[in-house]
View 1 (spheres, helix red, strand yellow):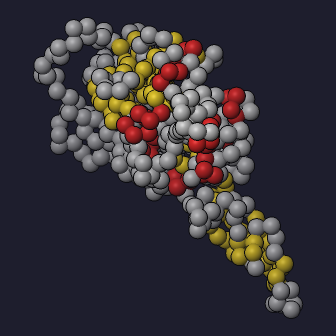
View 2 (cartoon, one colour; view 1 turned 30 degrees about the vertical axis):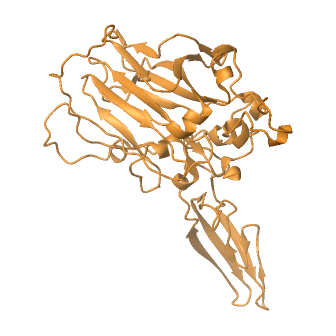
View 3 (cartoon, one colour; view 1 turned 90 degrees about the vertical axis):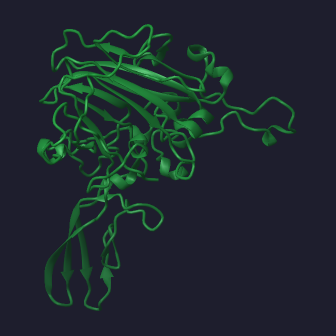
Length: 384
């Protein structure tokens, strides 16, 4: 279920730029959002568009270009969790200073089969004059429970050669419950020290080891769908664009493949807390128990990103503005057309003839978070 992502970093300058830097190495980023830099070619001689009502030149925005199927995008209130119909997903950058970090939440609504088969197009506009860098951090979730494995293991070799195991060894060999091979990835991180009390030899010694898991193998989401490469940790590469305060526009085609995905959660990050015991789904509920921004034993969903974020930052990565996108799929067109008053997760069966309800086509044809991650302690890998 893995594809990977390349982040284009652009510089409005010479095409014979120096070798592409690894921004993660230079900036010390290790949050699962990996980047690579390339050169931006900005054409300031392009002909003006025929748009009869172009947006103000100071607006940072996302929008959907004309499509042959219905897509809606509006602002969204994360407190009331409601859409504001007929509102544009924009931030006016006029007068903003680095560090102001203005956030606009936006909701994209699509019918479920359109999403599954066609995905969605997305236009991004970064106006000139403010942003030194633009980047996209696509939504991703923890697909398999991922955790740092136990650090200390102990076994005893008895005089008769039998072995007394502890909870994390089997016949003297290290065992981690987060290593799902051969049926899934190895999601056991970090290393361990195995202390061996050898009563046959009359000595105690230690053997260090690594659990060998890669967290990037255990996540999924739009970041993987949009990926063109991956890091050494198997996370998708992300896009960062050196705009150098120049205007920048991009159109993304966000499409999953039915060969690799059987649900819509690779694209649809919307969830209703009612379906998850009043909380987030487990795969989106980032736990950093020690509050040290470093994965420790007991932490999970550490690299989850609940939203897709479109970011405008300065040269020191202080934020001017961020647009956070939530994507929601709808089970029926009838409810979709109601939008704010509709129910995206309506359940049941088609009402037309077809025999008993169990033999009719269901209204919910593609799983989203309500079905693929019910409650707050179920991982989506359980439904793969």
